[in-house]
Amino acid sequence: MKALVVAGASLGGMNTVQSARSAGYDGPICLVDPSPVLPHDRPPLTKQVLAGEWELERARQPVADKLAEFDVDLRLGVAAESLDVAGLAVGLDDGSRLDASAVVLATGSRARSLPDATAPGTHTLRTGADCLALRGELDLRPERVVVIGAGFIGAEVAATCRSRGLEVTMLEADEVPLGRVLPGGMGAFMADLHRSGGVDVRLGARPEAILTDDHGHTSGVRLDDGEVVPARVVVVGIGAVPAVDWLAGSALSLRSPAEGGGVATDATLLAAPGVVAVGDVASWPNPLFDGEVMRVEHWENAIDQGAHAGRRVLAELDPKRWDNPGGFSSVPWFWSDQYDSKIQMVGRARPGDEPVVVSGAPGEDRFVVLYRRGGWCTAALGLNRPRDLVRARMAMSESLAWDGVASLF
Amino acid sequence: MKIVIDYDLCEANAICMAIEPSVFEVREDDNLYILDEEPPEELRPKMEEAARRCPKQAISIEG
Ligand SMILES: Cc1cc2nc3c(=O)[nH]c(=O)nc-3n(C[C@H](O)[C@H](O)[C@H](O)COP(=O)(O)OP(=O)(O)OC[C@H]3O[C@@H](n4cnc5c(N)ncnc54)[C@H](O)[C@@H]3O)c2cc1C
Ligand code: SF4
View 1 (cartoon, chains in turn brown, red):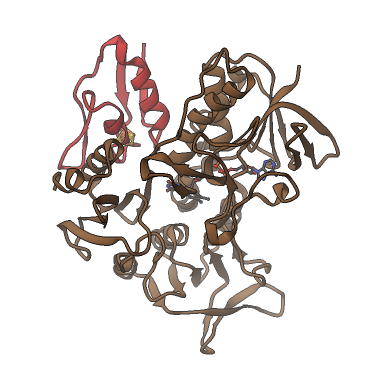
View 2 (spheres, rainbow over the protein chains, first blue to last red):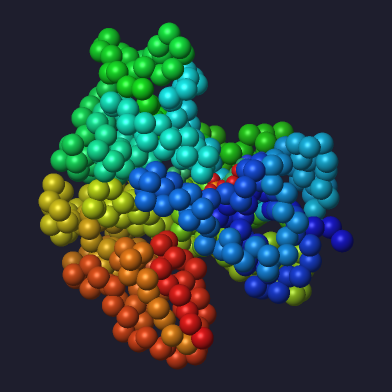
């Protein structure tokens, strides 16, 4: 019997497996991932594990303990290299070929880097191994850490380094951080948060080169105005790109970077007959947002899409036995812990959406901003306002109508 | 069925409240309160969903 082949054993892949098993699928499952160990849960890698509060082993994926129950043929250390969409087969980098009953694409993202970011001392952060490598250098108490990029990962690394008592310089090319995620200049509070946390925040700072010493070790960053910021540890936090390179020669439709990247699927997460995409790689028209195409790089999205994708793929295997769960409608939700602050965002704003402050004010310890697009509330941003954000989210999952969400405040 | 929260882990992000507000409530003081420690059996799927989706894995279900 051919197996259900799942490429990627992180949140999206594992939750798809859990969903398929709990819906009663008892056929073979083959789960492949190039990671040598079961991928760790990622959020603690910038927070508790990097801080040294947790050992890496504690950053376990939520369903990791159930792996034995799931009865999967787990192939770690092996990557999917090609996909034959018409013949439903996956080529692996160990030279073998897996004939599949259906395929789940759950290959997530990898960290974006800079061309010269190869010297020892320069890091990106995506996996447990990346985290230990960086933590090992922080343990040596470098005089300064430079973080390139004020996105969420860079920002969390900066906050964690400060909590370890290290000096940090954060370089952000734009004048306001997070312009894409928080349009309308709302990311400015992030720069303030880090300044009050003791970070040397440089906005409009463009790194030109990562410098090395005579031993080839990282020694600093040169900016385009010629200034050199010396540092033995540099963390490149300039975002992630979907891991879809292996699908380039396949018949699947991939979105261009301008379209947000990833594997194009229909509203149900189906990329082609028998092929489903889930998590960071999936670019789908979200029915709740009237079919706006989204690709969401958030923890909870991978879990929710996994629950959906498991059922969706079973409907491909045997539509008489399993119903198609239909479109995947969701209000994306994201959190980031920095210092003692909880930043949360629900929904998805895009440039042009108008920020409306409904509680507190940016610059204060607690505030809520809603984003308005015509008659819709497309997103809510909260600092230390979890209760308000969850209420906004519950309202938005019923309807994005502006009045309904705004009336909560 | 009994709901147990590990308050050392819980960060009061209210995800569980979005799943079942009759059991989980995050109040204005930013703390999580359990409104019903022994919820009725028909809420078990919701409780399991909350346990699975809690980002801090702070919810456990006993019995
Ligand atoms: C350091 C860090 C901190 C984060 N913190 C937060 C947070 O605070 N809040 C939040 O909402 N989100 C956070 N995120 C984002 C969240 O972790 C991701 O959205 C989530 O992990 C996505 O899950 P995924 O399964 O889609 O992809 P991934 O977790 O990226 O996993 C993809 C898996 O596929 C494997 N793979 C890649 N290529 C292949 C191939 N060719 N064949 C087979 N397998 C392959 C990879 O090895 C990997 O294990 C964070 C991410 C990182 C990196
Ligand atoms: S989901 Fe988990 S962390 Fe969040 S409030 Fe509930 S128990 Fe606490």
